Length: 86
Image (cartoon, rainbow, N blue to C red; front, side, top):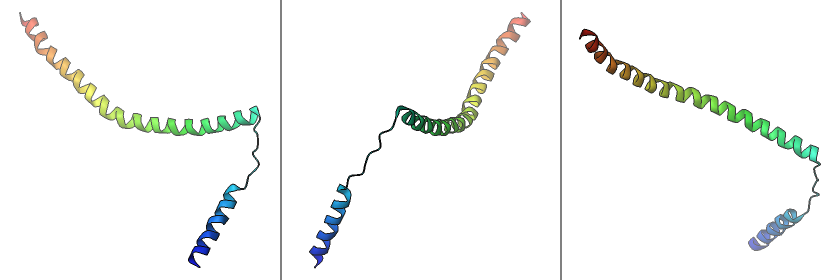
């Protein structure tokens, strides 16, 4: 009994999977419209992700660059003051 139920389920799934659905052939315009809509959706997602990454990274990288510029400026200051006293 257990095997007959398994076999029945297997064959019913097999036959439903094997049924052929008619494929619709897209015209060039339909294909282009579908591709454009997919690209537009992905472009919006990528732009949003890029903006979030920029916000996150800019606070980190700008601080490091600003610190580097300040250190370089401070390193030059004693030399400039020593040169002006001579």
